[in-house]
Length: 79
Image 1 (cartoon, one colour):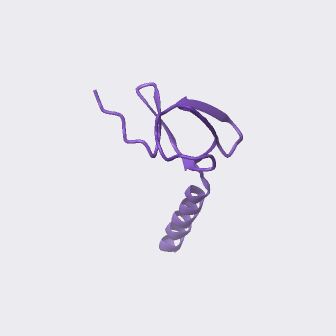
Image 2 (cartoon, one colour):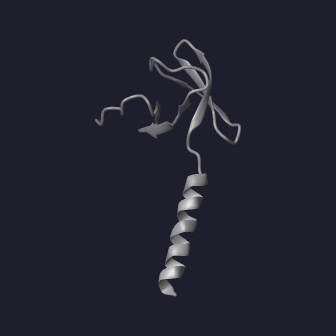
Image 3 (cartoon, rainbow, N blue to C red):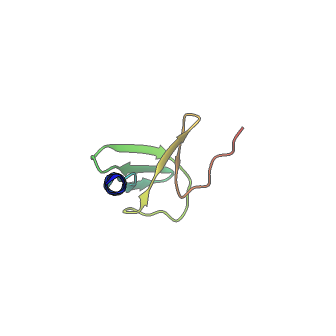
């Protein structure tokens, strides 16, 4: 019985995590300003010089040391 309960909890946890979406969609690119929208409809504009991105691409925004970074971009150097 314990194994069954543990398995149910594990499966529920996996399904909950799979429902979370951390990817944002690029909605506009103007020069080095990229506007992205998350699943909740919030938009955020960041500055980045990443090449090869286009409107509709899925990206993740990370914040490190107060600076926003796009996931396809290499990690910022640690100082």
